[in-house]
Image (cartoon, rainbow, N blue to C red; front, top):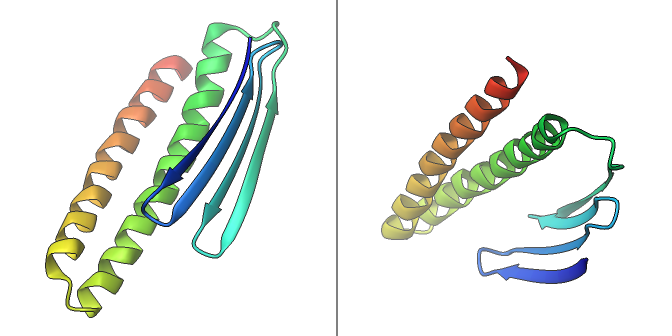
Length: 113
């Protein structure tokens, strides 16, 4: 099965994700505030469920932390621009992202033992 999809988040962080699940490969392109990075993964069917989850969780933790950092950065910019309600919402989003990261790290730790 192969599928492609694009995301355009209104938070100035467009994402394009392409996935191919024949042999389990991923290609992710991200653009974050003036820089971009790609992730290419190719995993043969020899990976265990635990290995696949550990790989995904590690990626999700890094990805979520990147979003958290952007939320905090833009909250400060909004605050400086007098947009206190926007700043508050972004600060809350950053705080919630920290909680998501904690849950993902707990899942990774449970796999690692």
